[in-house]
Amino acid sequence: EAQVTQNPRYLITVTGKKLTVTCSQNMNHEYMSWYRQDPGLGLRQIYYSMNVEVTDKGDVPEGYKVSRKEKRNFPLILESPSPNQTSLYFCASSLGGASYNEQFFGPGTRLTVL
Amino acid sequence: AQRVTQPEKLLSVFKGAPVELKCNYSYSGSPELFWYVQYSRQRLQLLLRHISRESIKGFTADLNKGETSFHLKKPFAQEEDSAMYYCALSRYNQGGKLIFGQGTELSVKP
Image (cartoon, rainbow over all chains, first blue to last red; front, side):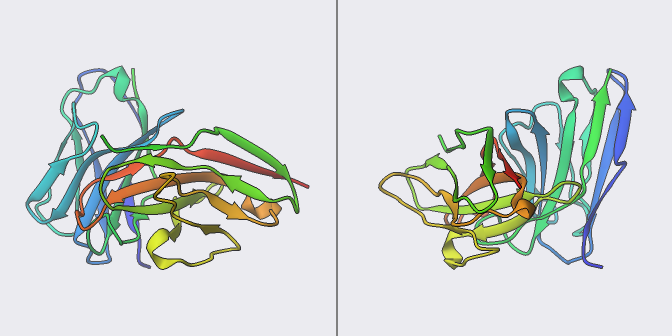
């Protein structure tokens, strides 16, 4: 089944403890992106990647890192999580870039930073 | 700066009533606009995009460049339309950034 998967789906951690949220797609998509969803703010783009080894900042990149070593994977790394990064995170992918192309979303990862 | 505004957090209508979810944007270039929908316990998914000029599940949206709007409309709401709706903007032929509005929760009552 063509899909975007994220792991873990739920995570509770403490301030400063490095964590990685994985994202994988099996559709051979070039474009991948990370968003966070917060009440009243909608979805805000954190980072995106147009292809392998090509990444760029979205609107809220502070405190996050990403890498794109393989086409199918786009992990989100929080080197030193803080409580203001408590949020619902979505990964998405599409055939080409964000314009024209339908974004396929993962199920979301709910992160709580204590 | 690019921005997408959905002024209503919650829109509540009765079944069979017309629905209009508002979306306004600010962008000086040529925008690509989308509506995404998230039904309860489902993933966010594309509903429609302005470039396709299509009607999906009875919904339509027209890009009005003069008013910088992309309102989503349906003449007769159904209970299964209850969901969270997001308007999104991308810059024409510049593939990276996708900007979402704050979202509008549509509740269709029987």
